[in-house]
Image: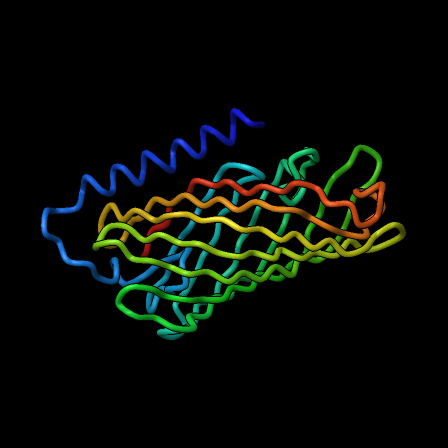
Length: 225
């Protein structure tokens, strides 16, 4: 797992280096390409097709700019790591709505909230866990020239497992990422978040309240129509 994490971090560093080299000498700082799928900035208008792969899984989503400040869409995720917990390799599915709200934007920074509720399923050999994901995230975006958007954020991907032995789990994840615009409509991105997951679900936590290290490290693309 440490080797895998190192590989993702190296990819992120390479993308940042490539973006810096791509900036023309003397270029002024602006608002990127006017849209984003990871920072506090929204699409504004149009529709974007998104995909990500890494740990804990693979996702495909569609996002539509409903207003200049609000995006709505959906996302389908296949996970091979249970909600990012590095010691829990379990196949699972999530089907989520996706809502993003831009709170504030200036020429140098933007702030946004996202919410992605939906059902989740994890498939063990003798049973299936069924639950509800209610994740919320606060993100700060920092545009760097016209080609690069950095972000830092706090994610709380809260979820509840139903049934006997079920309960709530509260991950608290911090991290950052970037989006590099190949052109006005196509972007490649990298995002990483990490921190503890604390919960009362006895099926996952033998000692209730004990924290589990949780990691999300995802490389992705997005295309805006």
